[in-house]
Image (cartoon, rainbow, N blue to C red):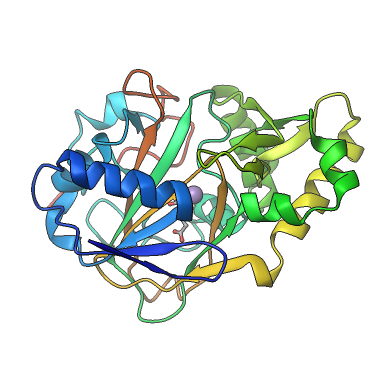
Length: 308
Ligand code: OGA
Ligand code: MN
């Protein structure tokens, strides 16, 4: 196995990994080491491992965080394994969803820089996104390294945020993404959010800034000043010179560390091209469960039973 860098600051590709069999300790250690250093890792050509291989590989690195509504989804067979998050633009039958639908509007929120599950009170580790169908143009996923961003912050900003804690909420990021407040309020009622320090120590030992689109308030600050600080830090982190844009190839398995990387989707011709990305999430430790037991108010709804 071999590692090749994808961007001057961070990101790498692992070449020569065989995911078609139970991962052995050598493979697990190799991926852990690569992730510690590069924080975004791509393993290409993995479409053949399917949902079962995807889940087996993910579970080698920690307990799964199951998607919202897993308990209902598991009894309602859909297009993909119920343990996976559906990050596609497809319905239960694999057809493109209406770009004006509520689910499409919710997925638009992914186009703001975020760390997955920062609104959940669980020890989130990695996301592992597998591209089964990718659009022929656009629809890149963009990343920034929050360790590098932290290093680049002016010293007075580092001092200001050192002990600050931000509140994160899924409803807040969807509102920022343009979802109506009535729809966001329904989400808020089942997903209360979580508090996160604004500076974290990443697995490499380097400090990392920790904000993203789910952050909306800072403890000890009035709402407007907290929001202004979050917006300022996000604008700083989103500078083009810090961004690695991943151009998807079919079969790419893209892994990122949610503790020290931000990511965002980018637009593509949503009504024209299928984009079938499926995501496994792992926590650092704990039981394998969903942070959000009910799916009824969240448009990441269980796929309807196949009719065909
Ligand atoms: C995700 C996500 C971005 C994309 O799956 O968590 O934010 O490009 N995806 O689809
Ligand atoms: Mn995401």
